[in-house]
Length: 167
Image (cartoon, rainbow, N blue to C red):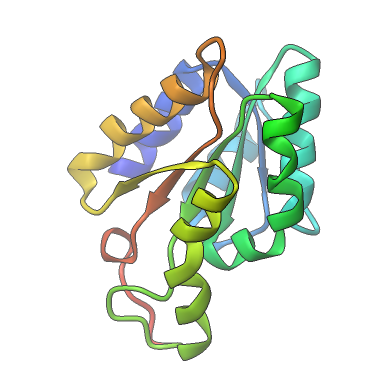
């Protein structure tokens, strides 16, 4: 299962802090992080807290990942603007909505605006549309984010990969 392999790859990268707003698309990653004694799993009240947590993790010599849904990108625009000024590594995995077979029209505008919003704030987006693309895209994203002089990177897990929702 690609979700299991993705969690293992995150841990191989040395990520020890996983922050998230609960999301069904990230269910397995969240459960694995919460069960892992070597990982600090942090439930957020708002996605923007995960950006601040990434800055703090870097200052403390640790690596983090923020798990969020595409609607959460809109919720943390202002905090995302601080990444470039603060020059800290940032890696997020975003489960996409508002795409392939979306049944909830409320999800469409932000789903369609995610890449443009990230681009406006200097966050590079890599996308996985099929299970066989996830590990390669995740590895590339983490290399880009955590190498010296790294850049903010978002791994977008497409709705085609995750499955469309009727609600």
